[in-house]
Each structure stands twice: as structure tokens, then as C-alpha cells.
View: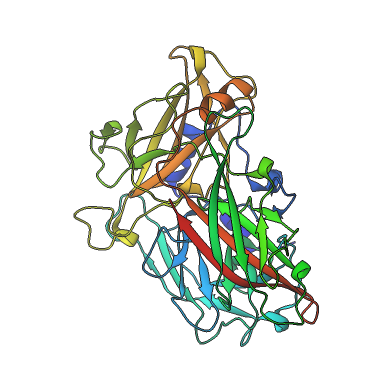
Length: 432
């Protein structure tokens, strides 16, 4: 059977990338999204295809704000900007496909039921990196556009593939189309949870159904904290005590414990300083070593609020167009566990530079008593953290200093029997 273009790409790599992968691959291997979905405490799952190894720095956000949640307001508002790099010197057109999903992220409708124009589009805006040591191709795509528009609100997934080959997937990302058709009041209550030293946040929303023929029990409200879009917590039980108004809130045991402060990395300047311990610009790619992170001191405070996103534009001093001129840096992370002893089940690093999708297992360095891993990261600002199954480390991170600023987002869904799906009638953000 002849090889597809993706088969060829999987067996090809730039020499520098091959050397990098060989140098930093851990003996424990790595995991990605293909190992299984991420499930919320309310039982919802967001299933996404794993990123292809050549894809880096995927950004999906409203045009002009790299840290905002990717939400389109139906019929108006800012378009979404999709930007990413492919670690290949020669670019090529790619294709983009869209999928509608119900409130539980089950892909449900056929394209003709949710796309107003064409059923797929091509990404034709791509340019090679400019004067970088490690060459890559940068892609840009905005939607809605002349080819793509949406005829129904709801949850969506965008998929980027080889041109005209829907199943030859490079990556997927979630986004939303909201009607913003009614006002919604949001209140954030503080509650105490057994076993937590921090007060948890219990969102409470009220609104008036959009018509007399709409049943309050046709609504579901889902909540997220700090752009954890793949792990929503939902309430399907309205209170109609103040009819015609409707109220929803999370059960108290599902209230949001404050997120532990993430680790922050400013890689805009590749030079010692801040959290960068040392660098080497005599290699290709450049190298940087981040100061060790300690389990007993989790997170970086104070730090900018990136909302779980990487920020590239405007974050690389002295570079006119960071999207094409920023370097990729082989960045080494080191994690010192409790007691400086190896952790049962291992330690993984995950961050905005990988879309929080892939848990990359770190290698235990017995002589230095820490875990380490090297990731290829684009210059800019990034957030990251560590994951483990060990209860002592989970407890240490949960008891660490929480984020100083948190964003809570409420998604109001209406089960539309006529359309046989869930419409997203409103989205509300509250930051505190």
C-alpha cells in the first residue's frame, strides 16, 4: 500500500529535531491524549485527538487576546484566531474541519446542520520561520470567514488535517459559539469542604427562560475554572422557587477548590535571569535550564495571569514578528520531589506549550535526586505544572499557595428538541 503524506512525515524529521528528541527522551516514555479522555467530576468527557509530534504552540483565542477563552458570539463579535507551527522548513496547505457537540461533548450533528456555507476549508496562510536556527512553518487561520460560518450555537471542535484528508489528523481543539440571547446573573459563594484548608467557590446562576414554552428542566449549566475547558462541572437540577426565574448551582461537594498556582516561565529573553538558571546559545536549538521546582513550594507567585495559555505576540523583546521570528528553545525542567526520593508512579510535566494535552513523563536522576525532562518550547510566556498519582504529592500541591486571580465561566445550555442538540444560549465570565 502506498504511503500517505502523513506516513512519510512520521518517518521524517529535521536533523536538529532528531538530535533533540534522542537527547531528551526519558526512559519512562511519554503519554498523550490517545491514552484516554479527560473526564469531569460530573461525568462529561472531551475527547480530542492527540497532537502530531511535528505540531507545536497551538493557539486558539479571540482575535487580539491570547489569554481569552475561544468563544464566538453568534452573528457578531471578534473572529477566532488559530495559530500554530509545524516543525518543517517547507510548508504546505492544510485542511480544517469542524464538529458540533452536545453539552457533554458528544459529536452529534452532520455538517449541513451546523455549517452555513462550506463543510470544510483550507489553510492557505503559512510562511516559513525567519532567520531562526531551528526552521519551522507558521500557520494562521481566522474564522468565521467567507467559507466557514455557523448556523447553530453550541460546543465545537476544530480539526486540522493534511489537505483533503479528514482522518489524517494533526490536532484538535475545542471552542464555543454562543447566542448571548439573555441576561444571566452570577454569584460566587464561598464554602468549606472537608479536607481542604482553602475555601471553595460554588457558582450560582439565575436567569429567566427565553420563552413561555421553554421548560426550566430543558436547561443545563456547566462551569469551568481558569480555562479548564476539558473538565466542566455541570448542574442539571434547576430551582424554580422564584419562578419565572430559574436558578442553578453546583452541588457543594463539586465546588471549585482554588487552583494551585501554576509555574510561570518567561522565555522571551533567552538569557540567565528570572527563573532561567543558565543558557547555551552555541547549540542548535538554543538551550535553557529552568531553576529546579520543588514539591514543597509548588507554583510561582506572583506571576502574570495567563489563564492557562501561552503568550507569544508581544512577549519576545526585540523581535518584530514573534510568530515567525521567535526561536524554539530546548528547555530543561527539573522537579525535586518530597524527601528527594523517587515518586511511585512517576512524575509528568504538562503545560500551555502543549495545550495541557500531553503528560510527558520525566526521568529520575538518581545522582541529583530530581526528575528532569527537556521540552522544545517557543520563546514567549508559558504556564506549566506537574502531575502524579502519589497521594502525598497531590496533597502537597493542593495545600500550596492558590492562584491570586481566578476566572469562573458559566455555560448555559438549552436542550433543543427541534434541532436535536444542545444550544449554547449564554456564556458569562467572572474573574476574582
